[in-house]
Image 1 (spheres, helix red, strand yellow):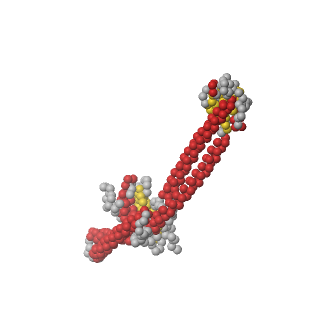
Image 2 (image 1 turned 60 degrees about the horizontal axis):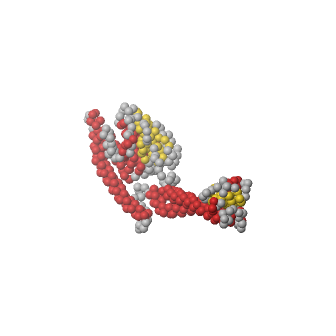
Image 3 (image 1 turned 135 degrees about the horizontal axis):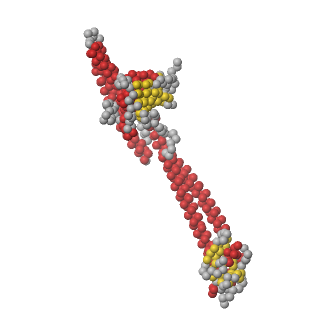
Length: 446
């Protein structure tokens, strides 16, 4: 089962660039919304203060023109046209001056007996009333709020449009700046994804560090240098060990085969020698797998039928328990681009592990996985503790009750990855290990 992977340039939800740009846009939008709200509040208060101040001045002017020096009320004289929306009431609340009959006039009449300044807002108007000097009555003046509301609405509309423009500009500028700043990182990610274990000498080479990105590139170049030296040392050590082991193995196998040619050899000794020859063959195959993993297994020059891989792996792994059925499903016309011996070295540890823990049966089946071929090894054993799913691929790490050395599954994954594939432990029950290998670009011609 191949895991989900991300490659540079592919869509990715909520990447760093998207998070930065989205955060900038949201913060700017919130700031502009708060600014518009504050502007509306300030305009409302300013309009209210202006209207109230204007009405207070008008009320005082109407009162001065209406009250005689002896405190009696008279018809106001010399009022401006703007003071026509004014009412004068005597001490009993009777209207002395002003329009009458409309809803606005009725609202003004309700303020006829005020003893302190008061206001009312009927139907888009603001009425202001204050008592006349010497208790002569009350004066009520009014002003329409619609011009002020229209001015406020226009100002808010302009502020909103400006806010949208600012948010769009900040978002575009943030996207451009972040894209420009992260362009070296994107280039580094694509370069690193294109490199393989064979490109040990490749470096980012961003030049002398002069900012955070180039400093990161210099640190990664140094890290890649250390990793390359470690890989080269590991490959050299593995190759040298494998080379040194081949000579004694050849000698042991040759001596065993010569001994088997003896006509007077007892049957029991012949069986022992045959087991020695089989063991040397198995050890030689393990050495070949180690060499393939150390060098990085190359692709096969010709497509390899998956059925051959399954048969080779089953023949190596089926020398264990005889009380477990090993079922190998035909793969049909599936081909991999991996040499058969390398693919078998990746698959046989999975089959051997399944045979070791299965209760009654092990099933091996292959299926088309698009760009890869997926080979599933299933057994009906006790399964793997969910907390140890990745531990099974750590060399030398095994459970106390395990009879193995903890090297088979890690080797299988390493050989598979060296061939461009992988080995994964599928979730759930029953236990399922899935080997993926690159699918051949085209099957061989019949």
